[in-house]
Structure formats: C-alpha cells, structure tokens
Amino acid sequence: MNAVVWLLVLLPSVAGAALCVAGRVADRAAPWLSVATAAAVLVLAAVAGLAAGVPRVEAGFVAGAPFGMAVDPLAAVVAPTVGAVTLLVLVFAAGDIRRAQARFHGLMLLFTAAVMVTVTSTTLTALLLGWEVMGATSYALIGFWWREDDRVSAGGTAFLTTRAADLGLYLAAGAALAGGAGLGLDALPDASPGWRHVVAAGVLVSALGKAAQLPFSFWLSRAMLGPSPVSALLHSAAMVAMGGYLLLRTAPLLAATGWAATTAAWVGAVTAVLLGAVAVAQRDLKQLLAASTSAQLGFVVLAAGSSAVAGGTVHLVAHAATKALLFLAAGAWLSALGTKELAGLRGVARRWPVVGVAFGVGALALAGVVPLSLWATKDAVLAGAREQSTVLYVVALAGSALSAAYAGKALLLLWRRVDDAGRRDVERHWDGELRGSRRVGWLEQGPMVVLAAGAALLGVLALPPAGDAVRRALGVPAEPSAGPVELVLSAALALVVLAAVARWRPPEPAWALGWLRLEPMAQAVAVRPVLALAGSLARFDDQVLAATVSRAAAGGLALGRVTDRAERAVDAAVETFATGVRRLGSAARRPQTGQLHEYFLQTLAVLAAGAVLLLVVS
Image (tube, rainbow, N blue to C red; front, top):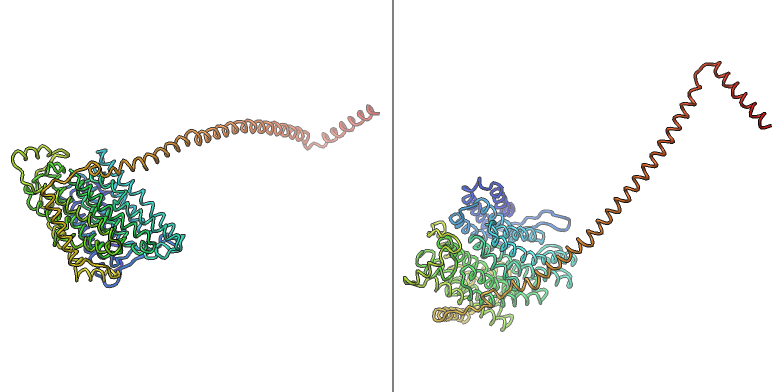
C-alpha cells in the first residue's frame, strides 16, 4: 500500500515531464493522456485515503533530513479533493486550450505532482520540495502565453512575491534543527521555547504568502492573466489552498506559541473583510473571483488560528469545488465572448443556461445561502472564532456578509435581462481581450455540472452527524459547533445582503477597486528599495571590487613579465656556463688519445713548463 503514496507523485511527474519534452509531437494525445493520468491519481488518492492504517514512506535525503510522505487523516480528505478538481479542470482544458497542448497539460501534471507532495509531506524536506516546484510551475503556467509580456510579468510577480514569503520555510527548517525538534512536521511544537517562536514565524509567513493573505494578496490579482484552467486549479484546490492547508496541518505549532495562532486568526479575519470589499468593488469577473479567493481562504486561516481544524478543512474542500466551478464558468465565457468585464457579461447566463445555472449554484453557495455548502462550513469556522473572541467573531461575520455582497453582484449582473439597446452596449465589450468563439462545448460544460453538485452538497460535512464523524476521522479534539441560532442568523444575513445588492448597486471605491494599492505599496516598501540596494551593490562591485580585481590582475601580469625577464636572464647565464663547461670538457678530452708516446711528451712538456716557472720564480 505504501507504493500508492509514491505513485501519487511519480505518475503525474513522469507523465507531465514526458509531455513537456515531447512538445508539439504529443499535442493531439496530450489532453487525453493528462485526463487519464489525473483519473488514475484520483483513484490512487481515494484508495490511499480509505486504506486501513496510514500509507507512509520515508527515504533518506541528507543526514538528519529524511524525505517523508504519508496519507494521514488530513491528507486523506484533501488529496482526493485535489485529484477530483484537477481531473475536472483538465477535462475543461481539453476543450478550452487549443495551442501548445502538450506543454500546457505537462505543466499542469507537474504542478499537480508538486501539490500532492505538499499534501502528503510529513517532513520539512518533502514540504520544501513540493513548495518550490509548485511555485516554479505556477510561474510557467501563469505566464504560459510567453509571447505576451504582460502575462510573463504577471507570472514573475506571483513567483517573486510567494518566493519572498517562502524564505520563511527555510528559516523554520533551520530553527527546527537548532531547536532540537528535527524536520518532522508533527515534531515542530517540540522545539525549544525560543526556537519554537522562530519556527512558527517562518511557517506563518510562508503560508500567508501562498494563501494570498494580507499583505501578500496582490499577487493573486496579477495571476488572473494566466489561462482560465490555471486560475481554476490554482485558486481552488492547489497553490492558494495549500497555504491554508499548511496552517491547518501545523495548527498545534501555532497554538503552542500562543501569539502565532492569534496572529493567524486575525490576519484571516481581516483579509476576509478587506478582500471582500475589494471583490465587491471589481468590474472584472475574474478579478472579483480572485479577491474572493483571498477572502475565503481567510476563513481557512482563521480556522487554523482558532483551533477549528475540522471546520477549516471542510471549508477548504467545499470552497475548492465552488471556486473551481466559478472560474471555469468565467473562463468559458471569456473564450466564447472574448471578455471578462462584467459590463460585457450582463445577461450571459441566459445565453448558456447550463453554465448559467451552474454558476448560480456556485455564487449562491459562495454567498452562504442555505442549504448550500459554504453556508454550513463558514459557520463551523465562525463557531471557533466565537470561542476565541467576540470581536474576532463579529469581524469574521462581516466578512461572511461581504461574501453575499460580491457573490450577489456577480450573480445579478450575469442573470440580468438585457433589452435590445442594452444588448448593443454589451456587445461592444465582446472580443476585447481575444477573439470569442461564440460557443461553449460539452467538454467545458460537463465538469461544471459535477462541481455544481459539490458546491451544493459538500456543506453536509460540517453538519451533524457528518461533522462529528469528520472531526473523529481527523483525530482533532472536540471543536465548538454552530448552534441553530447561529445557522439561522447566517442564513438570514446572506438573504438580507443579497436583497440589498439587488435593490442598491454596491459601491466601487477606488481604494478597493485597486486592491488596496497593495502592489504599489510593495513596490515602494520592498521592491524598489531592494532594487536600489541591488543597483548600489552592482555599482560597488563594478567600481570597487571589479576595479580592485582588475588592478590586482594588472599588477600580477606586470610582476609576471618582470619575473619572466629575470628567469630568461638566469636561463641565459646557465646556458653560457654550461657551454663553457662543455668546451672545457671537450678540451680536457682532446689529449686523451690513448697513444703512450703522446702521454710521455705531455709529461715532458709539463715538467719543462714547471722548470721554467721555477727558474723564473727563483
């Protein structure tokens, strides 16, 4: 059974890599190969989740840093969700993506493999691998149409923003080792008290960045320039959801520090409110849905901070189905009409009723209308907030009310009846971004019907007795649950807000329309100072370090030339001395003829010379 865990990762990895390498040769077969692979991954995830015991694998990576994966109770809920949403999104993509299909589907499968590593990781080593590959493939997918500079820039913004936050995981890993806890996720709360706070801070920052929570939310707006299937997967069950998932998995660590849990809860609640206001102000459907993703993930982060792990998990699952549905509908209309502006989509739900009804179910679920899914799951989260702080509960309830406002705004515009004069105004917006096909095929509509069923029914996981069964399955302590009064209150609040939106047009304040000006602030506070520092360091490198190295090199060359000349002089002297010695040797060998009479004559000559010298001296 442990082989199933490896297959969850290896199957999409190998298939995705093969498609990317094959390129255009595999374009025709790519959609069906990716759909078949995703179906197999879903089956594997379901089998692993239902298996008796916990399928677990561990491999050596480096000393003291094992690579561990397991389908534990939390992963047993989330992994099949990822598999199901991925399968439905890839079926939609088979009808929607017509160019570079092998590269697209290959990248989507690699992205899915990275998400599965993240879901099943039991150590920071495995988590970092999944985290990094997920970020890299998201960059490639958001900037998939790489010939268009704005799309590549959007991918770069998403990658660099989340990458900056990802440094928190490296900080957490170092602190965990220093604190004696090791790299196991379950062991992180056991780090020594001082290092435990550093571990929690690193995990919190990294998760908030991936989940697009304040102050990192702006990258999600830029990610909307990616293909619609990418938005549907990235915003529902994959990358953004993984930030919330990490906090749910490490909730004991957050609780052990005290401050980290409180910080997470308040960041989640404030994000739900402020990004809810941003969503209400948007005039672009995908931008509205993107802001709502940050807001809805705020409830998951709130759940992790208020120890409502079961409530946060069921909200994550129900939101995955709901948001995938809404993004696929927006993508279908974008492909058909060439626009995602709300002004150009008025009445579009009537033109394609299947898509319109499915979108309506998702929007009403997002609004919290009873008995649809997010009505119950949000209340499960709000119950945990109520136990922690009344003020926190009120803030989160305001975020829930804003959910009804932005969902109602989109729903009413898309279903509004348009007369002939209004139709002409609507049609002026068509083909603004791309050439619309004026059709939505069955491959695009089919997945929306399935997801609409999930958006309608998955809320049962938060209600008794299913909710109690989920808590027991996850092995979490008893959590506060929403009572009948709270359930009725939230249902009534959603209906009141929807009625108000239908009666009065929601405001579109500039501060909210521009995503709280988070990106300009990030540019001013972080990006420009970092670039300025990098420029200063580059100039210092060029003018000081490089110049010093150049001068040192020039001096070394000059010294080398002097040394070379000295070496040549020494060589010449040695050669001259050797030549003289050779000549003396030759002269010394010349008398050695072997003739005895010559030796006598030489002796006589030497004696005569000696006698003459003696006479001269005396």
